[in-house]
Image 1 (cartoon, rainbow, N blue to C red):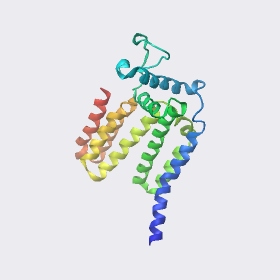
Image 2 (tube, rainbow, N blue to C red):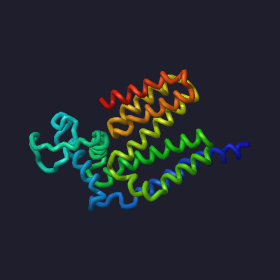
Image 3 (cartoon, helix red, strand yellow):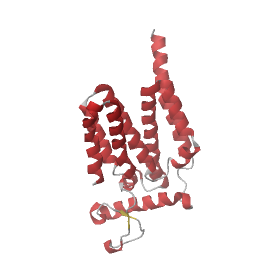
Length: 233
């Protein structure tokens, strides 16, 4: 019996740890390479904004992403405003902790991609068991597109993470009806809006699913929707 339980625990651990390890190894190839070419334009852009946060501070930059480099006066700041500043702020934190390097910038989206894969594992496990979780996570992480772009500093990796995190929390709420999961969804939607605009639509999609499947509980989903709306504002 002990041997059987030990084997089950080992399979449980391997079913999520092995795909994540493979994905981390694939994305870590060349992680310290310098920014070169159009492919690395986003890395250079958001690293510059992150460095400017450390150089000038949040007050002087007003939390905005200052995209031009060099010694600048506040009136010379040029702001990048197409996406929220979450990725630049997080890279700035990575720079403060680990130093200003290409690898410490790429580490941020790499971790978000692994977090998205872990959320995908939980969703697949809920729907089809651990084997489904293992296969879904492995297929996701070994795709060349994910191996190539999963570590690129940009909004896509955090967007995938927060979208899948909201789905995980939604499944937990559907299973337990505990209000705490709704509060966690609202918080995830609020924080996720700081990284990617697309996160805004996820609570609305989940609200639509709840209205179709558990109509009398749909009103409760207005709390995560409110988190996204406040984050957008």
